Length: 331
Ligand SMILES: [Zn+2]
Image (tube, rainbow, N blue to C red):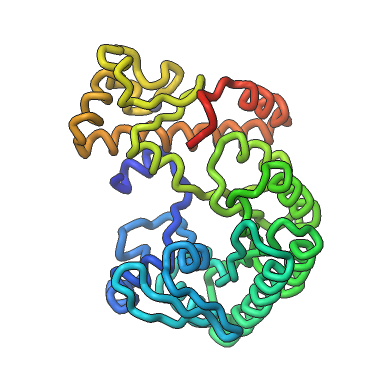
């Protein structure tokens, strides 16, 4: 996607990942080119994720110690050791507007002992990150990430300890990773009830529309997910009446747009039949046109969510979204 396309879709903020940028192209290059805004020519707000999740999910040989985390690059196996202070310094070089502290990601399922240890180290690292920042002076916003798995007492403690350290925003990490939906929603609801109202709350990695609308009702402000873009590349398109898998033969001569209610560039100009053809031929334009539609669909839902909050009709919007037919579970 070109930045112009992303801007035309009215995206307000984009996300980069410190882990990936640290590995490639590397900090020396980004530093020489004046930070991420300058390097990628995006003047709008950028959030950088610390890469905690990626270190644990992508890297082999990950080992967490009190001092920091050691891992092997998933690209070439190079051994790397990063402290929470290093991760702050990496994001200082990136120069993003919002940076996330390094957390100790706790997978699902984890025993209570493991979850307690992960939350404890996350708090220690959060404290060290904050102390490190205070020695540097900083114009970037810094958000904490709460852990604790699906154990409410641990998660509550994690949130309270992070609030005591005092961050500009708070993220809920380690949710939406396979735990039952009831536990997921319980953690979101209870966490949201004790987080400060005046600071943003960020539910990391959540992208299903049904989860998003419920989480918004519980008080969540921020989301990030690869779902709209990854699915677009895989030919799965979101519509107001459910999902479309564009490679299906039934779309071979379908002259309708992806979604007749959508006013994105793709839907205003191209038929399902043409998009299927592009997908089948593996044309780059297939990924581009599909991504334009899926991003527009998501950003439009968020516009509707913001509008419904302002007009005090979020509940009705949620009802209409939750009752829309979904062609199977989201992928
Ligand atoms: Zn569209």
